[in-house]
Length: 375
Ligand SMILES: NC(=O)c1ccc[n+]([C@@H]2O[C@H](COP(=O)([O-])OP(=O)(O)OC[C@H]3O[C@@H](n4cnc5c(N)ncnc54)[C@H](OP(=O)(O)O)[C@@H]3O)[C@@H](O)[C@H]2O)c1
Image 1: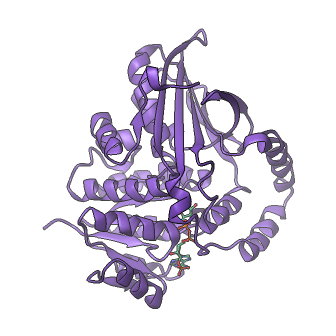
Image 2 (image 1 turned 90 degrees about the vertical axis):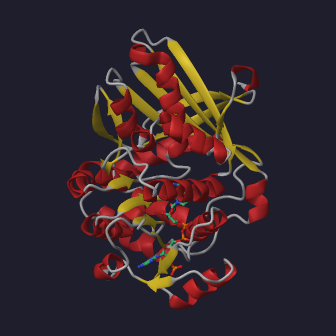
């Protein structure tokens, strides 16, 4: 019998979007979270008939008890730097495939370097950051690498909000995650290996719809996953282009913060204070704001002489809708035995480029032809 899809965090903003996407696909996920009342309300909004179960990250066995071998756990309980470990370990222990909605570099690094080898031994796939962060950059990067082949030495990837701007801003959970992960070092793929690097160490410009936009460097799953596709790749850079004119000031701020957090005790004080002030579970952009927003994802591949050899641009829906759709699609594929490996997997390792590209296209994330690209 095929396993179930268990959605942990179903009462949150992204969790409910994911539940809606699963139900639209004809799935009947088990909705899990810490509040029985909120779970009952979500199940009702989704038309009734869905099972619910209570689990709390403060009580790790309660998450383990949700799962059986062959299930797929989708978790949207963040900030992952603070709360993510219990769900990841429960999936490994149960022998359940795992997907999460994180975008946090410190947690991603743990998935690839710490949980991944354990997941491989357990024979399960771990698909971390299987949302707007960082699936589109992996897809754009893999398509650019396919074209560049063994000539590729460096790849630069950019994420941008287009159409209706930022689509109504960030969810409370995204803000809480940004604050929870900012005191930890990020990383990059540089010189053919993962190196610690602060967020915002680099800024570069991308041509987007007739404007030159600044974007700030961040750690994504591209740094771990793209070098698996092209072993000549020496440098992977991922940039966020959401901050407009504030990008340069943010770069200065992240430099200042990394100096301050190096002082013993400051990081712990900051984390304790920030977790009291910045809280999740406060909703996110309403459907009307999301409907007017679009996203653009760019990948540039360069050769050993730093000459551009390929360029790919993807157009997609707003980031939150896309995250719910991607998690639902990925969970269904994993449940149906379509994973091509075990351990910590990038989106292309997990499904192969063709299946991933077709799946993304069905969710509205499509490559633009050269004629449709407005730089
Ligand atoms: N990768 C991407 O592109 C992307 C896109 C969207 C979101 N995200 C990330 O996904 C995460 C969720 O975002 P969101 O906007 O949905 O946040 P949210 O609305 O705050 O949802 C957080 C969820 O976690 C649950 N939770 C919190 N503490 C818990 C605990 N102790 N035990 C069990 N459940 C607990 C909350 O339950 P209650 O309802 O009971 O409070 C809620 O269901 C964040 O880390 C965010 O950064 C990433």
